[in-house]
Length: 470
Image 1 (cartoon, rainbow, N blue to C red):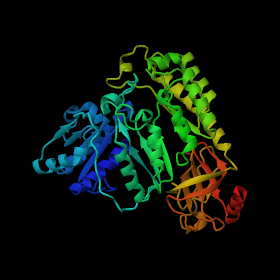
Image 2: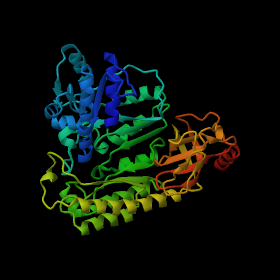
Image 3: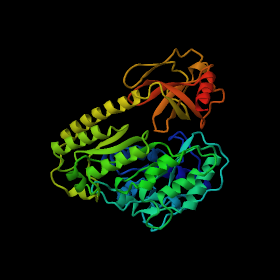
């Protein structure tokens, strides 16, 4: 969500004469968009701001702005802690950033704007004919949250839940598709409850409308709250070809006692029942989740229930975190805090178990043909002929004096199930027009813990597949 906000801010600042630069040292303005969901992220913010203070001493005219969740949470305290900051703006002030920057330029003042709005402030951009350099991007469909999980700061820094008008969402996506975007990820703290409060269309109905957009190839979304996962949304995975076969369904714990303390509003049994029903409707769906270890009062028995749930579900991937107290969140006041040592040990144990399942799932795909949406060059790019056989698939670089040919170029993309696939272009493959945003069939040849490796089908193989279909 912060990525989307940052892109919106960067584009809106063009109206007051600013353009993005890749060099911090060359910047006339530095804008830091922050996250407060984890304590470590917040610590990094103030560490980075300290370094910017040294730059401000050398260049007093440099404008430094801090936005996002930490700005919303701390407000004027940021100016007290870092007096060289020019602007502090909250999560509801994104649309007002350009006018505040203009005021700072003309009046040399310092501004704090953390006012919370009861409506979503839309940023209207004219149709853009500039071509995107990436195949996919994000679109926020709602903001805020009404669930008040006891560990979470989101309702306090992003406000109550509000949904965007579906017409505005559709128009934004159409404009993005016109610039070359082929995959959209819809964002919200709980997309499953989209439109309910405002009596708009339901989330499955919104997905159906988006699927009608010509030129759009894939739709993803995050995040889903298990308590609101409806049968209609489950059926959308079966009925909408453009909806990717992947769902991120955070569970946070496998213990009913801890789930109740977290105020998650579902039980372990209800969660597993939804998983079973979803897999019955869409057997090939990939599933990922979030886990928190070391929640206040979590016993070893509670943690074992979490491990047991993981063994039952066998997730394709997992985002796991050590619990940390967050300002305003109810759990910050809970007793029976778990030691940092114990939290760290539990996290490592959980991640080790998940790595086993991720690798197992990836290996099961060897030999299959997957439709890959090309994102661009892989991180190893044109100098990576061979892939190592280690669990993380580390590559071996060729001599820097070698001139890469077509067979050396390594591309990357994702499956419908959101798995990263690296592959090389070859003379035998029908990939002469290979480019970002193209969907190509790739046969998976190797599997690693965090990615797959394959080869695009040859023209002969493609003909065989077409023959099989007929």
